[in-house]
Image (cartoon, rainbow over all chains, first blue to last red; front, side, top):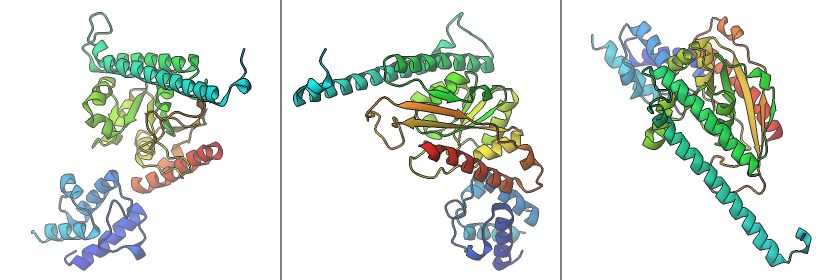
Amino acid sequence: MDTKEAIFEQLKAILHDLFEVDPGTLSGSCNLYQDLDIDSIDAVDMAARLHELTGKKLEPADFRSLQTVDDVVEKVYALVNAG
Amino acid sequence: MITPARLSPTQARTARAAARMKHLLGTLFGLLIFSAGALLVPLLGYLPGLGRSDRQASRQLANRLRLAGLAKFLLAYFRITGLMQAPSIQGLHRLRGGNQLIAATHPTLVDGLFLIALLPTANCVTKSALWRNPITAAPLRALGYIRNDSEDLVAQCAASLEKGQPLIIFPEGTRSVPGQELKLLRGCAHIAVSAGVDITPVVIHCQPRVFGKGEGWLTMPPRSPEFRIDIFPDIVIAPYLTSGQPRSKVARRLTRDIEEFLGRHYNSTA
């Protein structure tokens, strides 16, 4: 989980496992809420799963400001590399 | 007695215009009574000797009973004045009250009144837009209704069901759009799974439509609307609880099943 590519692959797996998102069609610019049919309850579950994986706590308020898959990748990357 | 056939075209036009005017005024008057009543509901709770209570919960319950009385009155008024025909209700015995989760279609603004009249103690999930308007927010708060954009929506709904109150939800999150496939939000499924209660599907039809989505408030139907309320056997929740899948997937599967059920019965006769 130290490169952005690795984070993206992890996220792709989470989105597939939890939210039935087809990994083949997923790109970084996909909007979580409009394109991937994720709702506020899903966002909580996704934040919890990312917490398990990274050991870093994602505040729900922080998470709500993230719109695209790339936003999430950037956020997780920043958290993981903050030490 | 003059039969309509003997009327001259001008007379017929005048008669039609008069009928429309009567209908319009009658509807406006009914809505006026209801709005005034609904606005008074929260105030009534504070009158001495009229259900005054220090406990918020019982005050809310008393307000709900008053609103149900008002809904019954308004529906009777619409029926007696011929503005609306008596609804035909199928499966009324399936409304058993208690911790029952009602998932209903929402073709018009009037169907909320029917459900409130049938289940006076029920709680209701209500649209956030109504809470942002101070005039509609006051009665909703006094009734202890639940706001659909609450952070802890599912927990609030589960807690309300746990208290033994029926919960009414329009799982589309807004009024149904005629001629379109029903599209459900997943909140209803999450509530059912979290609270572990079965879902009672209720399909409400209104022909011709009044107070539908995208229609003006004063758009008058060509004839007095006829309502049909079909209460179906419960969608049993137990099989969804034992799948071992994450809740996000269970909620998706259950939502598809509710959507398919409501859609099939809503569009079959709409």
